[in-house]
Amino acid sequence: MPDRAQFTPDDLDAYFRRVGWSGARRADVATLKGVHLAHARAIPFENLDPVRGSAPSLAPADLIAKLVSSRRGGYCYEHNTLFAGVLEALGFGVTRLAARVVVGAERFEDRPRTHLALLVEVPGGTGPYLADVGFGAPGALLEPVPLTPDTEFRAVGRRHRLVHAPHRGPLELWVLETRVAEEDRTPWRAQYAFTVEPFEHPDFEVVNWHIATNPRSPFSRRPYAQRVTPDRHLLLDGAVLTETRADGTVTERELTRDAEVRKVLAEDFGIDVPDDCPSLLP
Image (cartoon, rainbow, N blue to C red):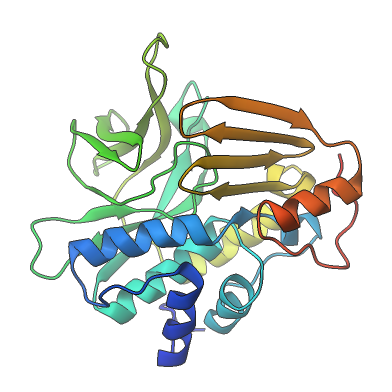
């Protein structure tokens, strides 16, 4: 397939209906932020294809069929490949970036480049934006942020900043951090690290297959789903369902039956579990 996803006008119409976007379709900052937030709230994060033992397709038609025309979601390669194709169709410039997920890591170099993020150029703009609708973790970006170091950005109740970190290489290493509770001893937490070197579709095809099929990958071993709404964040990690309300209240419960997991995915996450999916309980 081509390195860049090609979507038809009908595909774009279906996508905007799926995410509930009725605003302008032009390449400006307001549209970029609005569509980014709409996508993040409308299409859930989920890894049911790897749990079923298969690597999800990144072909444009398959992304439209799964994430747009069905009650399904996907993980970062699917979300951000779809989002990049939509942005390019609107006239934005998009660079695919390979990032190291460094949540909980002592050394950034210990983590491989397994995350797809996007660097978006706005025509006539003053600088690129980091965009990411496919990071499956609490505190993920809901709106893109300018590629500017040491500046706090607040959007939709979340706080982020980009900082530089030392590393061995000719390019600057950027780190996306999210702000956690004020009383925490380390209120800024690193989410992922990246350079602005462009990566192409074949690079992510390889990583997508590895992450989906490697028996040591966390995405191939247990269900993981995330959904964001204006008033809450839902996270299913294995059998544990965590709800974080907008006021910071957190509730957690363990699901004990496979039928219960499937019902929660269908009713709370908006995900129809495929009929051939094996038991979702660890």
